[in-house]
Length: 420
Image (cartoon, rainbow, N blue to C red):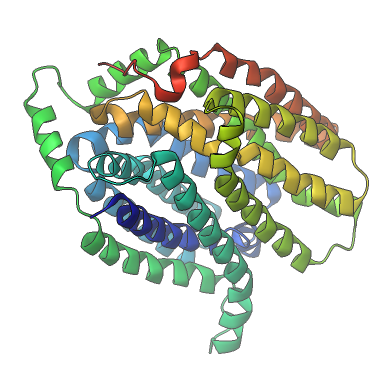
């Protein structure tokens, strides 16, 4: 298999995965409300979801490194199916919290597994395609997948109501489709993803006298990454990334409703679809963008995130629905332009046996930022205003960009491997 074929295979797989995820994004809050939850209770449920994902992120990354990335990914699909089944039948606050805990755990189990698998497999193959080019192509299809999933997720309640012979909730159709397609993805993963070399590495790791278990593996990786010139700034900015992303994603709909009281639901769906289209465009543009900075990923990250912070400041002050929409989309283009660069810097700085663990650690910092945002910035938005919350988030984002400049100039092709 060539690098090009492997990239296409993985891109199609990830597009399908995120298409399934997108099916519930437009309706999950509405589903909770239809089950009788108040906004405060919904906040608690979402905190449980993100919290379970954050708490399990790092140790489960270590499990994937040692026992096989494909196997652990398949377990995540099983947990997703279980969590979706509980969601389908849950009729109480406690049951919905249980479902959220399962779905958050599934996200933690998945984190970093196949990303690490693809990186290792890609560099074993011959071809002219660079990893940055491959990542850009994958993220374009991935983003299109979740965008299309969100679009159809908005249509499914109407389709389900039209075809259902009972008076069940229309949002159940989204959950049922998630269960069915996750089963399909489970089978496709078994057929399409091969990781014989990863299993061999796992056997070597088990035999190594330096490996005494997953917990020690995670602790060693964490300690080393915090002392690493490239990884430490990325972990710190990852926390800010999660904080800002959660703040904007949670509050943009209420803010738009304040600007235009009679906003149609269809407009929210359209903006959501365009958001993912902008993220896909950012991924596609990232290869040329890094070339403008003479191959420097850190300068691309510094510039794009600083500009994103400036746009968020403007967004927090706008009073026009049309200007709001344009600034919101421009923000997400700039905010996601450096996503591929972050992944490249992380993968270049870590050895194969720590890759899933480190990717999970990075995802954990993002989740931690999201939890912090849910607790503090959402409270500030409730007490003062959404504009105040966004102004704080934008200021923090701009200030955090200077951490990128602390990375070594050679970090584009980092030779200092973690635990080398």
